[in-house]
Length: 179
Image (tube, rainbow, N blue to C red; front, side, top):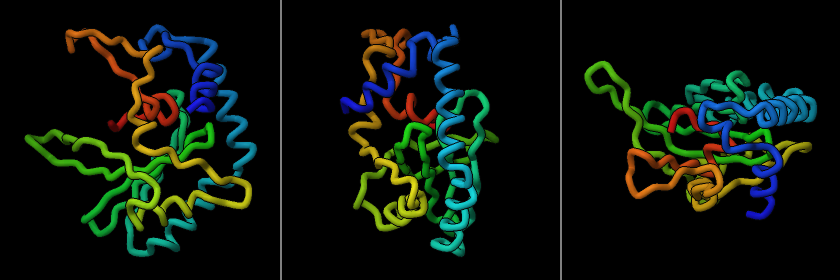
């Protein structure tokens, strides 16, 4: 946890998460994206190739975009419409995966609660992780307890839920738009 706190404190400022912006945070993220892409120049193709080989019948979508200061590469893996997983590799060298389910209610998609999967909890997720590991890159798989932990310094915690805003470690390291 100490390492994660150092990454966050070195790269982020609270204002970044409240539409006030933070030039320092934006520059740090852009620099980290550049470093990530230099070190992992062919990571998207490598991961996609491994995913297709490991899950030949799955529908795989690359949701990676480094616009809007996204901080991870992200893939949706749909296994015959029965199970859908989002696997993410952070530009800071962390990995996470969660089951992704949606429902269409009155022309609006709703997302079920996100539950991150820990290492060795699911054979499918363990196989997904192996697709992100390479000779030059072995990301650290963060467990759900760490990912769901609220980062106090960036959160606004209030007894009134209308005025509270909790920012979890996952929101910071992975840009969880879909949560």
